[in-house]
Amino acid sequence: MPFCRERVHSAWVALLAFALAATLRLGIAVAQPATPVAPTPVSEAAPMPVAGVIPATLALHVTGSPADGAFLYAQICAALERAIRPTLRPGASIHFGSVVPWPLVPLDPGYRISATVGVTLDGGSDSEPVDGFTQVLIENEPVAPVTPSVLFLSDDPEYLQGEGLVFGGRVEVGHAARLYYYHSDTGIPRDLDVVLTAAVPSQVQITESAAGPDLDAMSVGHTVSKELPSFEAQNESVIVDLEPGVPFVVRHDLLFADEVVAGAVDLHPLSGGPVKVSVVSSLAGGKAETYLNGPRLPYDGHNRHGIFSLDGYGELASTFTAGGPDVAVKYGYTSPPNVDPGDAGRDLGAYGVVHRITFKLVNPTDVPHLIYLYEKPLGGSVRSTFFVDGQRKEVGCARLEQPYWFMTYVLPPHSVSASTTRTMTDGGSSYPVEFGTTETRPAVYTPPINASDGCSPPRAAPPESEASQ
Image (cartoon, rainbow, N blue to C red; front, side, top):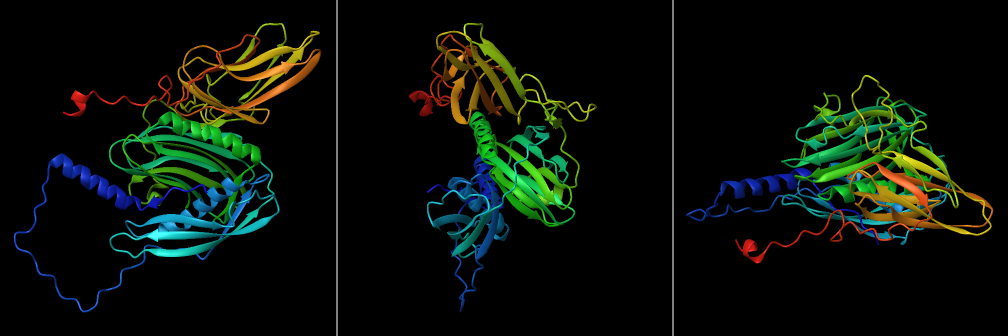
């Protein structure tokens, strides 16, 4: 069974971590009292409050053609976490148990199922644990997919050093926008929240991929760019209702020093009024809604922020003829146009963009030809996921400026065909990248990211003399 991450009240975790770090830094010794203090007799201990509240039922509306079982399970966990987390006492945590029926089967549009999920809330020092079950009613709504026309980029400041509004954007009903965010914490523990709000009752469709917190920036970025195109291809999303004055938390995470989070959220308001999306940084255990209407945090100077038009951007095409020269295109070297020409913000690298690359393949000869698809890094280390004619192809860590193979075609004699690839730039990778077709066999080995010659090789153990110091 796949599992969802455990959630612990962030203020409690952060307080323990901060107190421990301060104690170690200051060298504080805690002494035992010289004279034991006799306990006060208590006739009857006062009952402790419960760790939180487990809902008896929960409604979940999804889309998908179909919505597969792993996606459904992830959305069940996310919905339960959103419902339970506000009720948790300090130090309490959530554990999800058995799911009946199991495994969850793909759910076609227009159909519904019911699943029963076991939930345990472990208590903290001042709360009692709770065990229970939630019946989740899941319905697949037949909603057509919508391609975002604008990109909200939240990567400025990239390194969070304060509390406040990091990004704010607005999406009108009938339109769609993608939020791409990439942030790292510095110093003390902080919460990062992605929040939706609306002034009138509204309904919004959400397609989301999220990764981290993690110290490995490349893996965090790669997870997002691997998942989002896959969700889009299946039209897998959730549909939620927004109430005026009630923030809807799409994502909530506790970050420690140097940890990175990334995510892509496609938003499509279906009814009601405009939907505001906000990215908020707050001290661990704080309240994100405190900063929703406040000023933005200062930019950090690299100008990786803004609202960008996606109309027509990322569409690339070329023609390859067997027996002729290699053909290639480049992506990730320009920024989509900023909708505000007076804004200095740019998205160099095209982070958050899903590129669609089509090669027309022509073989005018009397014999079949073997051709190869390749990528060639031009800006540094890069990890890629390519969806080639519906097949997912993951490439390891391409670092050298040379062609790396990932797909082979045989072109029959006197044939004309086409190959279409969808790929999303990776947060944590460096661009541009050359993407092309050739009849010369490229390098067939691309090292995995954690290999000794990969992008994030395992750290060598310190010499024994250093380790013992």
